[in-house]
Length: 133
Image 1: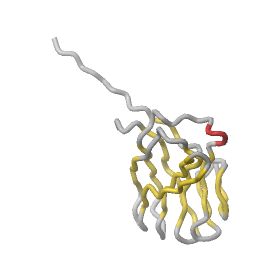
Image 2: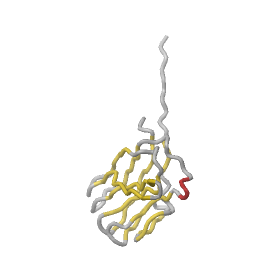
Image 3: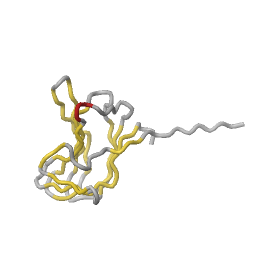
Image 4: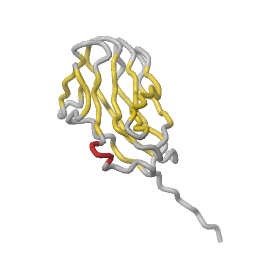
C-alpha cells in the first residue's frame, strides 16, 4: 500500500484594490489596473494598526502584463515605530512576473508597487504564499 501526501500551499491575495497606501496613482478595481501619474508613485495596501497577521507567509508572487518600464515591489516593515522600506524585487521592462521572499514574522506596515516612469500597469495576479507552490 502506498500513501500519498498532498500538501496544500497557503495562498492569499494581496488586497491592493482599492488603494489604501500610496500617492501619484489611481486604480481601477474592475480592470485591475494602476495608473502612475509620475514615476515612482506608490500604489498598495496599508496594514492599518497591524491588524493582519502575515506570519504564515514567506513569499509574494506578482504577475503583470509587460510594461514599458520597471515595476518594483516594496514592503515597509515597522521596527518599533521606525519604518524600514525594502525593495523586494523588480520586474524589468517587457517581463511579466516575480516571486520574492519576505519576513512575515516582522510587523508589516504596507506593501506597494511603484513604476519607474508614468504609465499603466495591469495586475494579473498578486498573492502571498507559504512558498509551497
